[in-house]
Length: 114
Length: 114
Image (tube, chains in turn blue, yellow):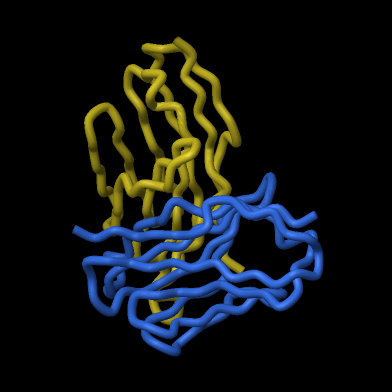
């Protein structure tokens, strides 16, 4: 069966510090991978998605970047965190196919930037 | 920018009550409508995917309907139980260039009081 891991679960970082959040998927090959953020009082916002190794699409201009160095690994990074980067970050995966785009979410990382 | 709206934003019901809430979405370039349940401290969990106008899906006491012509979906919960307390998210999947991506609403937070 497929599983998705995210770490760390919680992170408190000072403004201006770097960030690296990691997501890995097991039990499937060539998944689509996604990073979402839920900021306080807001819905889930898609940040990045990837349909293959090295292929990253950014949905919104922001202070963050994503990379996919391996088929089942997706990394969210920042060189210098802003206060507005605080939120709950979710990684998700899916298998290819319009109308079959059920996404499966990881446990999430709660990031607080002070 | 796709607009996916959910109402109400939050809802309190008593155990045993039946309830329903709404998701509205663009009626053009429609491919699928997804419902997720997001319990506190857990990951969002897929409930339903609906693709055809008039679709109805059911899972236990929870059911959903779809009207693609007017761009709305209803989620119904019959005989609510405290364990139904969660945020219910709908997500729009479009056709054409928006494949692979889901646009989420902000969710309806349901609290079922025992």
